[in-house]
Length: 133
Image (cartoon, rainbow, N blue to C red; front, side, top):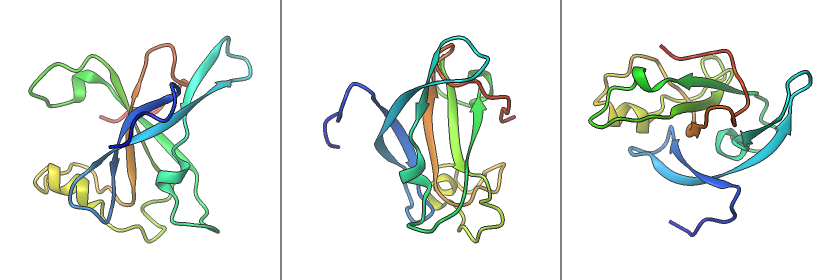
């Protein structure tokens, strides 16, 4: 893995539709302001991980995964943010092989296309309303 490119980069996990295992990647975060909401928030730049190339049309969508919903061997105290293509179910995206392989084919959701997971720090990440259950 290459060294951290800058202090604004954080580790993410990329689940590729074409790979059997996920990869660690550096994700750049930028500060944004949301009209009507006080303060600045960190927003990961996930577009380069979700695109299929020039001319590709999609919006990224975020789902929050709370620590209590994660089946794990050790405690995770942070909420995770999962980013995907908003139209992955109808845009011809292939099954996300790397997500299927790490769950031994027992995924509860029919994930397709690339997925990127990063930590969503409480109070620092852009607020979202959708959560994964």
